[in-house]
Image (cartoon, rainbow, N blue to C red):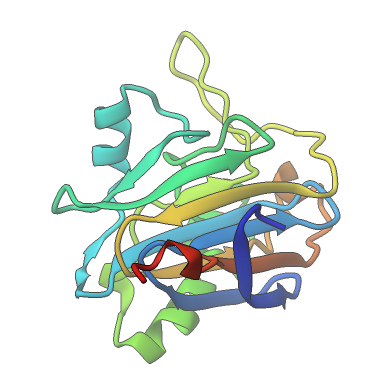
Length: 212
Ligand SMILES: [Zn+2]
């Protein structure tokens, strides 16, 4: 529930599945980790030009920090602001590690997998005419990737509580795409992928402010 806003869309995204939807300017997308310890891989695009996509490097450079959290503006390649984090019960999310894929599961864990965030992104972006070129370094909501002083990094165990959530206000009309991560070879999902909740809110129209 967001104060002063109407719920316009509410969907459960089952474990291991992807989801994509247009979210209009001024609306707010809320992603809730229902059972805890569930990484959610996320991309967004400008619907005026879907080739203009989320840029992790622009986002990192503008804020001068490698983590995403409350107040982070998600920028596109063009430098346009796509979305802003307006609520965050966690405080720190990754945007350098990208999504899991069959190739990186093979390289990292020596396993052949059939499901991955990469293939989820391919599936949910295809109806919007987007292919592999659209899949870039994404935001990993609810995923902890600490970077040590010597530059080592890795996916860390994070005891995230059920009900953890982030809210993202759109700064223009966007296409939001996410993968409810199916990864079973590192602790990003607590080795137990679970459903998440997505909601879209729109500011309640205040008719009392209209001129009489
Ligand atoms: Zn994944």
